[in-house]
Amino acid sequence: MALMSELRGAIERDELMLWCQPKLQVKSGRVCGAEALVRWKHPRLGMVSPGDFIKHAENTGLITPLTYWMLDAALRQLYAWHEQGEWQPLSINLSARDLHDPKLLERVEGALATWGAEPGWIEFELTESALMLDPTAALETLSRLKRLELRLAIDDYGTGYSSLAYLRQLPVDTLKIDQSFVHGMQRDQGCEAIVHSTIELAHSLGLSVIAEGVEDQATLTRLDALACDMAQGYCISRPLPAEEFKGWWMQKA
Ligand code: G
Ligand code: G
Ligand code: MN
Ligand code: NA
Image (tube, rainbow, N blue to C red; front, side, top):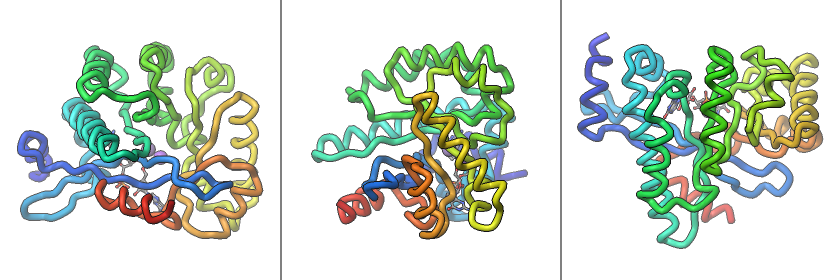
């Protein structure tokens, strides 16, 4: 696809943008951060979604500079918010390939130092299936990231077949329940049972839990009853440009 040959240049020309999808604490309704999502502001095509280029970036290795771009963009934004007096933590997605990047740790450490990052500014999300491609290497990389005192979350949880024995060893803070189960909760008892048991599992392991893809108030109310800690989804907010996210959380407070 021709678009894909332009992606490398897009990173160099600074056509990527940082968008943020807010996360709420379910019980209090307070904002507790956002997921950092890349958007490509294409000069002819307008806003291109990561769904249309992340796979390609992973397959070609362009994900590595893209991850570095995101790390820098998120920390630059946090630095600016911090200067302005208020900030919210941002969660950055890492791909399976990033787990094998020998420079990742050095890059992360360097970026944290460059921007004078405070503890809690950054979290990393890794999908359960990315971890399971090479569980041993994943455990090693996560342990090294954890030594930098970063928060870690398992994304798309429930779709990647990790065992409890493996999960227990991982130095993660949060399980993020896959949206497929959250969408199904209202009409499918099986989905609700999976969400419920994942919340109990997370809590019994001392982890917090976030539901993603929350699209209606009824689901949010049910998640509250099930003691789900955090939620993210269209009924809270769609992803927003980073500047709009600040306006959104200030107005909410
Ligand atoms: O923003 P959108 O809803 O279109 O996201 C589509 C997918 O792209 C999601 O699965 C999301 O995790 C992924 N994604 C968004 N930004 C990044 C990024 O910076 N790095 C990686 N690896 N994935 C991302
Ligand atoms: O990293 P991850 O794959 O979880 O990225 C989240 C993806 O889900 C993004 O593409 C985001 O735009 C999308 N998304 C976020 N909230 C909702 C929602 O409530 N419903 C649906 N269908 N998609 C959502
Ligand atoms: Mn994610
Ligand atoms: Na996800």
